[in-house]
Structure formats: C-alpha cells, structure tokens
Length: 294
Image (tube, rainbow, N blue to C red):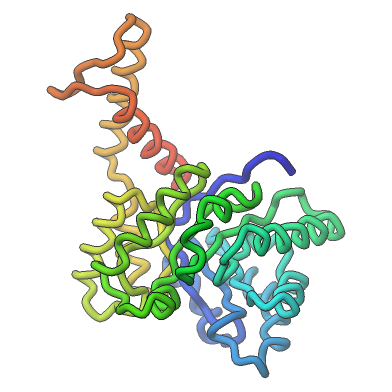
C-alpha cells in the first residue's frame, strides 16, 4: 500500500479496559470521538487471553453511535501478534502501538496488519496506526517513526511513561519540549500530532486542564488521548472550530485565491495582510472542520 492513510479527525480518544463490561457498555454515553480498547496496561497478564476475546464485541458496542473503535496492543512481540489477530476487523479503525522506539517496530506490526486484512477480505488500508512515544530513547528517531509506514496517521507522547524514563515529573513545563518535538516530527511526515503538555492522569482541576488544551491547540495539536469523561468534554469543546472561525477561514482563503488570480502574493483581509503561511493554517482549520462534519 503506497497511499498514506489520513487521520479521521478524532478530537478525543478515551481509554477503556476492554475486559470490564461496565466501562464498555456505558462508553457510548461519554461523548468521545473514539474509544481506545486497552489490551496493555489496564489488563493483568493473567487476563490478556480473556481480554482478546472481548475486543470485537466491545468495538461494535462503543462504535454504535458512530465513534471510532481503537485498540491499544502490547508491545512484546509475542503478545502483540496475538493482539493483532484478535483485533483486525472492520469494527476496529486503528491500532495504537505503545512504547515505540524504532521505525522497525512499527513496520513489522504493519506487515502483520497487511496480511490479516488480506486474509479477512477487508479493504486494504482499513486499519490505521497511532504510535505512542514513551521513552527518551525514541526522541532521536521521531522522524523515522513518523514516516515508518503509510498506515501511521498520528503520533502522541505518553506523558507518564515518558516522564519516568526521563527521571522527571510530568508537568506542563517539563513536557513542553518533548511534545513539541513529537509535533514537529508529525508535521514533517505529514501526519497528525496528538496530545498536550501535561499529565494525562491529572483531571482533578478541570479548569487547569482546559487551559492546557487551549495551549495545546495553539501548539498545533488536533486531538488527544484521555482517561476520564471530564477530559472528553473539554477536548471536544476546545478543539472544535467555531462557526465564526470556519466563516473567517473561508473568507480568508477566498480573498487570497482572488488576489493570487490577480497576480498578488499577499492580500488584505479584515484589516490584516495575509500570505501563504496564514492561508495554510486556514486551510487546515477548514480540513479539520470538514472531518467533524461542520
């Protein structure tokens, strides 16, 4: 498959332990754009086999209102292959690979997905990949990871595990640089940066969380993983372009294109001079709005 897959526009992706029915059954009431059915951290080793049997039924349950069903697999290859065997299905839209430290890790798992889609008669490319960066060892190879396979549509920093490998506290100040490094690598590879400079585990102060997400939006992040429904509401609210934003972006692009047709490289719009970089930001906003059906 040579064509790069595109990110579906999920603003919020809520983690769920796939083997706990009460969380799965109530998921559709939480309002997330996507749900990450977890086979990794939230599932004890003794229950991994049972959890795999829950994946497809859970994927059908959480996606019944149109949300995306994602699966976070284990990284240990023996477990990862079993996880993929249990997860590649039309009901599952993406695989989340944790603790990625090399492009080769992603490529091997992508090849397995290729084979499983083919064997199961699925449309080639039905399953996207989101890579989680959770170690300082991954920082020097972010570009290779981001461009490792056409299935990779997004990359995100796992704040807690990454901070542990760095010997630091997961604070906005300490997580800003690595998050920006991930975002820059995503932009170079033409994939989507997910995340925010803060701890995913801290949802006690929802006003502070809103401030963090507003800052993340300014940094260019378009969505994030989360662990609590309170976080879902904030992510969806902050990361949704307003009707005014969409109208301004349309007007700006139209003005620029009309100016370009008249031989101008920069034009005035609402009292400001606009040129190509400003237009590209407006086009991305319109693209994201279209993904959300706005």
